[in-house]
Length: 160
Picture 1 (cartoon, one colour):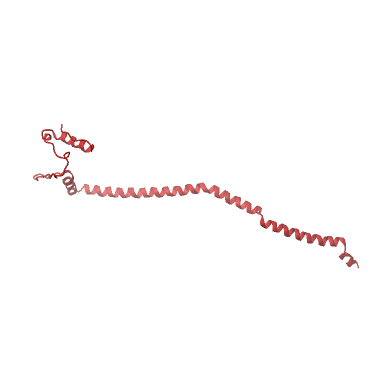
Picture 2 (cartoon, helix red, strand yellow):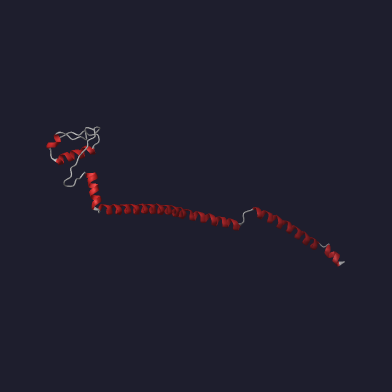
């Protein structure tokens, strides 16, 4: 009988009820925690947000500097190409035949013994034709008058 007595004793019944109640409470707590944000997850989110905020400005600066570097490289490449063209031009200008050709084309120079001709087109403006009174003046006066006339496109050329 003592075994039957233990089976129906108050302590045994309270113990069984306590275990059953504890199991229910544990299940309820577990369900609530699954739906909530845990402390670890909150800390992780805080660390990630802090890293994003801390790295945003340096990353923007890095991207900006990379684009500036690319622009500088393009400008340097353009400058190298310009230097290459100028060196080629310098070599050409050192050639006496090229210099003579340019003097003939651009400046209308003639070699001794050659006769030069100027062809005046009939459609030329009156500004560009030679003045009758210019023959009696020194050459530099005519030259400066031509420069002044070329400098001011609306100015009318008048002889001095």
